[in-house]
Length: 207
Image 1 (tube, rainbow, N blue to C red):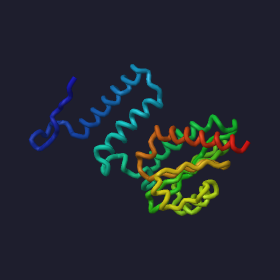
Image 2: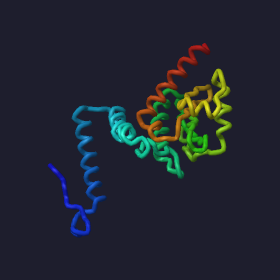
Image 3: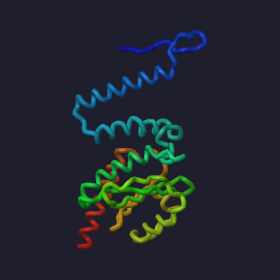
Image 4: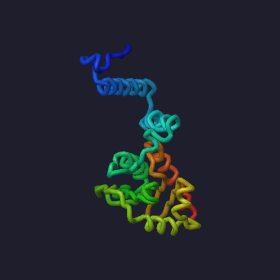
């Protein structure tokens, strides 16, 4: 059915507020999405892939500077976006850790706020999460990846590369630009799988 209520304005003071109209439409769209997902029996991973495409990738394609994908993943202590990424990444890795361990993470901000490094490491089960961004630790991150990579990378090279995956015996470091399109739910799974493959190859070489 169609939904075209009269918007409230000077000529129509009894109309419906535009914010209320949009909220109701979004609610119905969400219900329709869930019905379609259920009809096709999609998994949570498949749902996230579709949502990321519709909410982040496509809007960025049409509005590369003003869409949600271009917004900072970490800004003004808003950690909700990066928290979702880290929790999904950690769940992917947890099954490969010891029974009394779980992944935790630290967030490091560098390159004048343009780059993010997420440092994942095994911790005791039940340890609290602390994702408060660290802005004075970029040198430490460069030092850590320098110990693992064949050739050390500086900040300018990292910015040019746009993506760094480093796996060591102590943990995993992911470095990408501080934009939401690089830290989506589906990319959390892709990054986890990529680093798992690197860890397995490293273990084989060390045997």
